[in-house]
Amino acid sequence: MTDARAPKRLFIETYGCQMNVYDSERMRDVLTPLGYAVTDKPDDADLVILNTCHIREKATEKVYSEIGRLRAHKERRALEGKGMTITQEGCDKFCTFCVVPYTRGAEFSRPLADVLSEARSLADKGVREVTLLGQNVNAYHGGAAFTDLLSELAAINGIARIRYMTSHPIEMTDDLIALHGSEPKLMPFLHLPVQSGSDRILKAMNRKHDGAFYRDIIARVRAVRPDVALSTDFIVGFPGETEKEFEATMQLVRDVTFASAFSFKYSPRPGTPAAGMIGQVSEDEQSERLQRLQALLFSQQTAFNASQVGRTLPVLVTGKGRMPGQKHGRSPYLQSVHFQDTHAQNGDIVDVRITGSSQNSLTGELPALMPA
Ligand code: 5AD
Ligand code: SF4
View 1 (cartoon, rainbow, N blue to C red):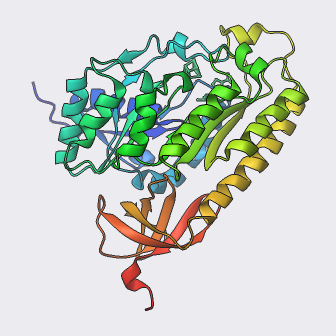
View 2 (view 1 turned 120 degrees about the vertical axis):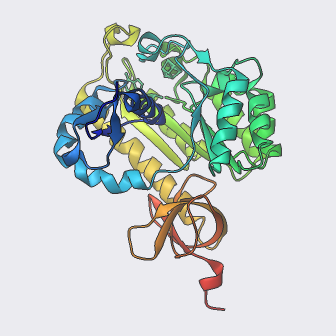
């Protein structure tokens, strides 16, 4: 039987991490055979899906407050980069604050051949950059080591850039660290959540690493790839966190220096061990610590962006910029770059001379347009 009616229109809005972006794509794939065609106009849609994140309850609240502002998100989505694939979801780490092992289940790795064939077909469609996604992507065990998967991806001609996200410090093997120095397609950006700088808190979080272990990994990655941009996640106000323990987090930030970071107030998630721990930190105290941490992190991010001014960076073009004649793209360090140009196509990698920076992005010009 055929359905003679016009296709039903589907609008999906995604909040949260790249895992959610991937899930939204899967929802689209499931709904397409049922007669849904994707629209970017929520007003025209027969079905609107708001795909949010349950890791932190704030994300859920945000959806409610942003329902009325859906239209403003249209532009941002058009700018989204090209390819993406996923190695695994789920997690076996059981950090005491986290719902993922309960809601997403055990770590699962897609077979190597499967990931490679998806990457090849993305490359055939013109995708230049592939990001391997997973809660603990570097714990990959799909019949080959994670580093073998990365190397095989790097051997695909059309793929120019490879990233992976998110990683757990205890899975940063010597081979993976070495690959950051030897594989030019592996981008100089590492998102490696640390959560806290206090060893006692890390233990209470069941993170399976201490501050020294984390610092050592960073030092070894920097030894092989000195320009690597580091990114991380922090939780402030974990149950029992004292001012001194919070200060250890601040000190870790001062010592390591991050190019970007996500930081959150601890939020008790039902069913997780930390939710029942004594010494829950008051909301006021959490807010005050988060403010201090973010002020430091933002100053580091601004300084990192400013350090690119004067350099010429290879930028992957991802779409149109906000201004007429402007393009948008991504630097090797995952920074947003806006530059004047009308010729470059999405997927091109062009050299852009960086002329300005702000906390969140860079601006630049094509060298050919620069006055001699
Ligand atoms: N409270 C606050 N932040 C959390 N995260 C995970 N669970 C919680 C929680 N209960 C943060 C961690 C993790 C990121 C994805 O979300 O920092 O790395
Ligand atoms: Fe959650 Fe990440 Fe810890 Fe897994 S490693 S339990 S996903 S915070």
